[in-house]
Image (cartoon, rainbow, N blue to C red; front, side):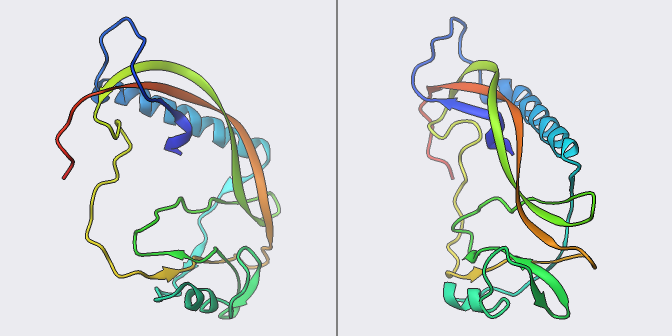
Length: 193
């Protein structure tokens, strides 16, 4: 996850060299991401876990949170195994699907027995490199941009379990996340489009 590989410090920089630009530190940002990804994958391997992509079902988008919740398994609780169209499945919490909130999708893994777990990452940040960057108020990687407002809608994610697999719950995966520490020096910029 990009956020785990980046620490931001707002305010004036205390570096002796002139501040860099976002383009100057993009390679360092990508390196920190790659180091964090490798540390996470090593932590999964140490627990004998492997990332998995499950077949998903699309319950559709509904106009209310209550309707979306009830549309899956007659309102089955999130992260409880249930029967869904002649298969075993699990479902996420209900969330807004109109782009208002873009959360990270849950990470699912399988263990050595083939059972399924939802990962709760537990990164410990470790500064890898510190840089001073001259950037707009939204920083190098923080502006989400504008878009057309869509009508409010809600949904739940549903994943179909492989045959004979059981959903076991949440598993914590701890790892060290090498981080790029960025101190921003404010630069006046035109408002983004």
